[in-house]
Image (cartoon, rainbow, N blue to C red; front, side, top):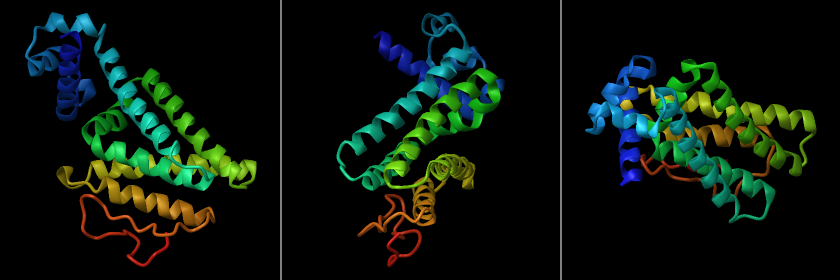
Length: 212
């Protein structure tokens, strides 16, 4: 029951933040959406900031868990890197409302949130850099490449979330970033890497015959 109420409040917060923005949202609006008294909110979250923090943690815990699970199925380092990117994009695609709140509202809400997000981004970048190092890339280049991928992926996903009234192609956009990064870093081509989008019949976004 406690977890059910907390979950209802988190889902209500996502709904309210999406429509009113974090700064414009009130605890009252969240509790009205959740169908509970305003005082109930404070049994679970000391403040609106703590509620947003919980949403940030939820998104990135899911991303990191998905990445870890995908990597556990692979042995070659380049395969681990490939599936890591896929797993991360899949979570953002499946959790697009939560991702929109975290990526759109959290960075500008407070320096504390920016620092929290930066910590997670550094974790992801470090994982990418480690894989690139094992694949033979020089130290400075792999640090630059890891930041480049992490930043490009975030920027493209935010752009797509804002596109066309919610009909964004997050999955396809993520695959484009992954393939361009792979080619740009000179990593070995993936056999059979043409992966169809679950939302689009177009197949490989760089062309059906591309090895990338």
